[in-house]
Length: 64
Image (cartoon, rainbow, N blue to C red; front, side):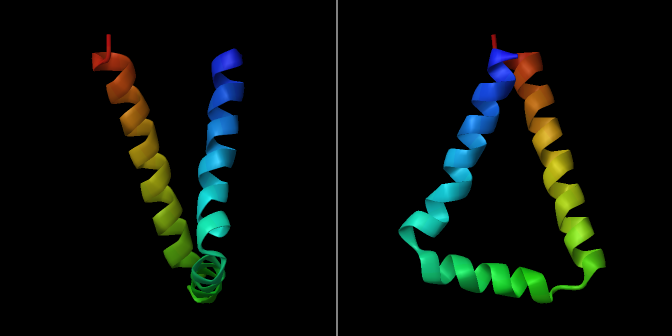
């Protein structure tokens, strides 16, 4: 449970870095993403989730 909470905290840190250092570019990226069709956003999200899960699996498998 501690690891999950730490992972969520690190996610919050990483999510906050871009708006902290480049708020105008971050707003433009959000506007661009909002203009994309839903199907494209779903594909992007699916690739990110699959890539994240694959990375976690590989780390758990090989990092000792």
